[in-house]
Image (tube, one colour):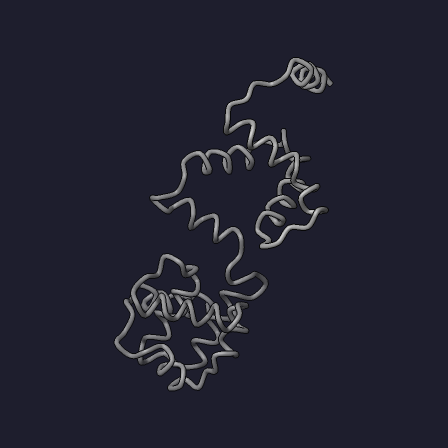
Length: 187
């Protein structure tokens, strides 16, 4: 009963637009410190500042839904610190405030998202035929995102880089490569 009352009273605020009062001013009114709110949301202070800036500018596409919902609740002048803290704890306890599932969800609803990437995500989520490659590919992504790559890193991603080069340049397979692939597929 208590939970449904809290949820119903908060749902009213979730549909609100940003108020003219700055979020930082509202936080001061509520006596909520930036580090405290960042801890509740399980994000860094710089990330929280970025979310606040995006929210205040009306660009909420880069803000997780739960964070935007919290900001809308905070925008309401009748909201109390206790309501805000209770909402934050309920919304963010036990999970990351900006987890990978939220990032994927936002990508999928983005009208500019690559359809081929969405198709790959779908196939990866509904099949296990290349599951043994996923740790390797994740490692490659880590290496590729580094500014400087040492020889060990380059060695780690060499197969992927060579394959990408051959595929994008449409270089045909050598007969022995094709034969090896056939043998592997028969296993």
